[in-house]
Length: 172
Image (cartoon, one colour):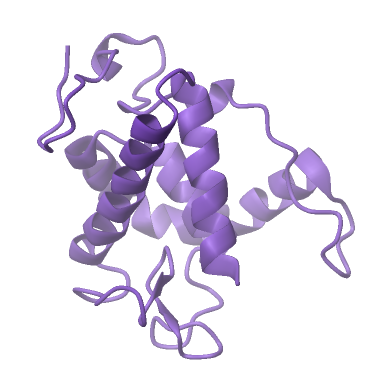
């Protein structure tokens, strides 16, 4: 059984290295999540829902390959599914393609996962492993807070609740 380095009192209930998929982390398997996909409220989308999300992922794939190694490294160091990290990066910055020197168009959010400068003090270069570790630690801290607040939820519910909240907070 894998345990986290944090002070969270419960060990992670799965050994991510013993699962059939290559690696899915200690916080659940995103492939088991039921999600609605890209919002149909977004203007000018050809497709919304799951197909819309798939289209965004396909468009971001070439650029995302540039970050593949650091995403895998950070995922393993933080016990988080690299696919979750990549999904957030795709959703927030389209693999960095919409950023200007690492910043969003308003100059308020920084890095591949878009940390708000008023809430966090970003570390490292916007596309560095150091910065990605910071963002993923924030994500895992929030997942752990949801685990404590809703102890009867499943791992998938904890993961879905936090990943939705992370995107919602960073999209405002």
